[in-house]
Structures are given as structure tokens and as C-alpha cells.
Length: 430
Image (cartoon, rainbow, N blue to C red; front, side):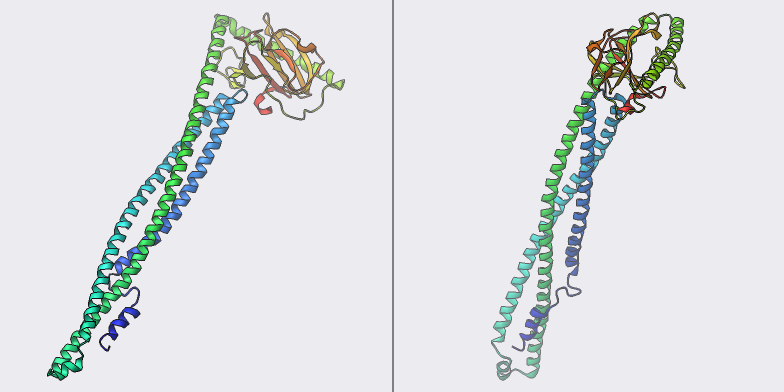
């Protein structure tokens, strides 16, 4: 019992991590567990960022697709949005690739951890078996007492040597027991880290799959939007090409064309002055309010072939710094499509636009307030629904039909908005 006492103390009282006894393995296991926690936090942050990017991308694509399907899409604005969506798609792809790379790293780490855990289990089993064998040997030896050894004729020197042998064996067993205790802690850490890594790998694999599905859906939606944009661009280009061919036929004599533009511009100002006088008289009669409360709506659904602003088409007159300026929006639809009032108001002019010279266009001008008018040009020459100058019309009421009258290069509606005496961009009032 005296000889076994140091061994028992060693087994029960050994510290968990004695210095100098392969502490590198335990430290490494602790470091791996701590690093896994940091990696998990970083991965969750990256997944959250990627999810936010995906949501923003999907919302942008939905808006772009909605604009393409909506009334009279602005091709320039839609093209710009598609470009932005393509850039965002690239960003999402890059982040997704990073997520896939992290998943591969986790798979590799899991494989290493499983290998180390298996090896540590085998090493621990071997050391436990060794300690058990040493304990059995010590027990068997202890059955021959030191007194019996002494009485059997051994010298005191022999007894001391025998005791020294047993003491040495106890110290070795104590060190082995301490190592086993440390190995058990290391194994427990390795096992828990393996479980955590396996769990995080499974979670990340599911998250990665979900992100892939969202990315594929966004790519498909964007491709649909791009196809719709291409189709609309093709249709618009065809309408513009038809207008250009018609204009070239009308303007073979460039000098005559320039003179016609100057004359038409002057006549247009004269017509504006006449209409302003008509509005003044109607206002005095109380038929036109001083201000318009509300917004305007599109007068017709179709393809926008020309927006408001500077244009490269030589049949448009100059304005400001633009050699050719378009003062309204051209909308192309099937010939005869109903044209509706953009808002409630009073018809102040309906008839031929003699500002066009010998080939006038049929126009309708509606005053929504003393300072706000809408103009509808190139209509068919008829009075729909019995409306006439001075008639009150409601928003959405048919006021004419798309035609090809006047200096028109194809059936279309020229829709313009005049605000306080100046033609302005109609989109600002929609």
C-alpha cells in the first residue's frame, strides 16, 4: 500500500495540463476550437452580406422588368439599369465563389480533424492499456511484502534497492496517468471541434445551395429582361428607320428643308400665342382653374421612338445648345389607336395646325390650368365623342386617334407638355 500510494495520488490528483508533457497537442486543439468560432462568425457575416446583395439584385431586376412591361418604357433609362444589374450580378457571383471556397476549406478541415480524432483515440487506448498492465504488475509484485524479502536473507542494501525500483515505477506511472488525462481533454476538444465543424459544414452547404438557387433565379430574370429590352430596341429601331426613310424622301433638298424648319418654328410660336389667348379668355369665363391638382398619365400605350431633349434627327429645329431639339415624346402604336386626355381639363384647340404650312397636322390642345397644357399632334382629322373647343374632358377620355397628318414620318403621336409658356419634359409630370 505504501508503494501504491504515490501512483493513486498521481491518477486522482494530476493536473489537467501539466507543463512539459506534450502540451502542444492540447494547445493546438484549443486554438482550432477558437479559430472555428471566429470562422463561423465571419461566414455568417458573409452569408448575410450575400443575402443582402441578392435581395437588392432581385428588387432591381423586378423593377427593370416592370418598367419594360410598363407603359412606354424609357429605353435609355432601362439600358442603364440593366448595366447596373449586370455589375451587381458580377459582385454576387464573386461573393458566392468565396462562399463555395470556404465550404471546400471546411470539408478539408473536417477531414483532418476526423483523422486526428481517430489517431488520438487509438493513442489514448494504447496508453490506457499500458497503464492497466503496469498497475496489474505493481499489484502482483506487492503481494510479496518487503518484510518477507528482508527476512528471507536480503540485506538492507538490497531492500533499499528494491524500494528504489518501486518508487521509480510509481513516478513513471504518475507521468503516464497525467498524459492520459491530458489526452482525454485533447480528445474531447477534438471531438467537439469535429462535431461543430461538421454541423457548420452542413449549414454552410445548405446556405450555399440556397444562394445558388437565388443567383440562378436572378440570372434567369435578368436574361429575360435583357431579351425583352433587345426586342423593344429592335422594334423601336425599326420605327425610327421608317421615320428616317420618310424624312429623307421629304428633305432631299437640304436648303429647302432648313427654310421649312425656320418657317415652322416661327409659325409654332404664333400658334402658341393664339392658344395662350384662348386660354386667357377661357380662364376669365371660369372654365380653366388657376392651378392643376394632380399628375398626368400617358395618353397612349406604345413604343417611345423619341424622348424629349436633344436629338440627332435633322428634321427637329434647334434649341439652346442643341442643333436639333425634340419638344415632346413620340409614341408609336398601331394606326388608329385611341389617344386619351392625360388629365382633366378644357379643350382649347382642336383642328389643323397651320403652323406646319401646306401640310398641317391635326392637333388637340388641352388646358389643365392657366399654366399647364398638353398637346397631341399628328392625329386623324375627326372629332371623337363629339368634343369640340371649349369641351371639358376627364382624365382618360378619348380625344382623338393616332394618325399620320402633317410633317409626319409615320403613324405616331407627338405628345408635349407646356408649362408656363415653355415646352418641358412630359415625364416630369407623370
